Image 1: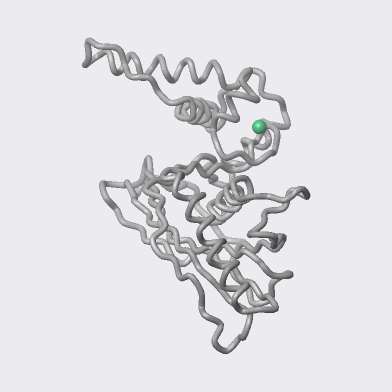
Image 2 (image 1 turned 180 degrees about the horizontal axis):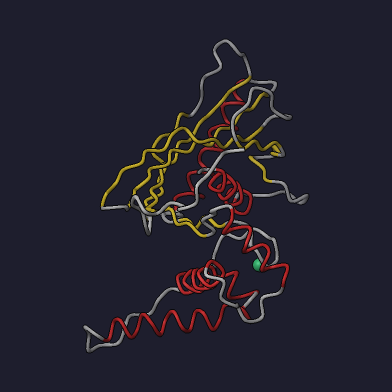
Length: 259
Ligand SMILES: [Zn+2]
């Protein structure tokens, strides 16, 4: 449920934190090479960043529509010769993470692109790099929305953000794959990757909203640990999911015996 969120948060931090000439992110002059997704006791050389989920609450807000609250923690552990330096590194790290996440009230969470196998932070990737496949789907999706809008409005439909169009285009391709309809210009390798997504019940594009830093624990003060200090930043994010069909007849009608 949260693995893709960890990867996305890691990518945002990696892309937006200050970097040195070697391309590693830095806090002051301290290079951070250690990343963990999920917490653990032993870390690579400090300072090390850990991203882990604390909880998620699932609430049914309408029939078959669920609102999930994710609570994710970003932790920095650092050890230096001097406790004042450790405290300063933590304070600066927390300031930087606060600055980075302050501008991400909504965050796309996207699985690896099934066509080029790269990670992306925006669905616009599909339109920019694979427009031969997705452009016609985006055009159709927008035309459908405009037709729907025109049924009840006399004014033109407001513009839709490019990322939303790209997300709709991806949904269109995904639906065709699910229903065994041919997708023009999709090669066999990409088709297999899409089939894998369907078989594994993946949600390739998700959207987190109301993403906010809810709590910062600047330091554990390391009273018993001398110069080794830990700081934690807690981020809360909401997600809405919907189940399209359910009921007693949404099961296989085959008789079974489990092997
Ligand atoms: Zn791609």
